[in-house]
Length: 70
Ligand SMILES: [Zn+2]
Image 1 (cartoon, protein in one colour):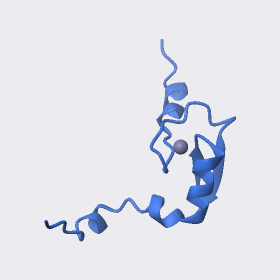
Image 2 (tube, protein in one colour):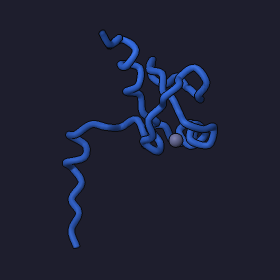
Image 3 (cartoon, rainbow, N blue to C red):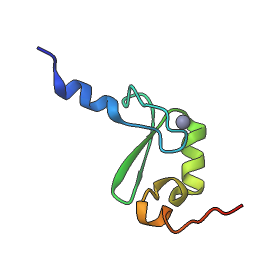
């Protein structure tokens, strides 16, 4: 039998670069709005710190406001 709880922890992604975080115990992390975010490197964490809203905002409704017209 597979341990499903173990595989659940593998679904965490770096909000900055989108990379999957495989070992949250050793990677960079930061708390923002009562949520903990994990990063693959310090560089990604710093980018997040400098502009967290850019990476946190994943509201679909907001995306639909943008109209790209060429
Ligand atoms: Zn990253």
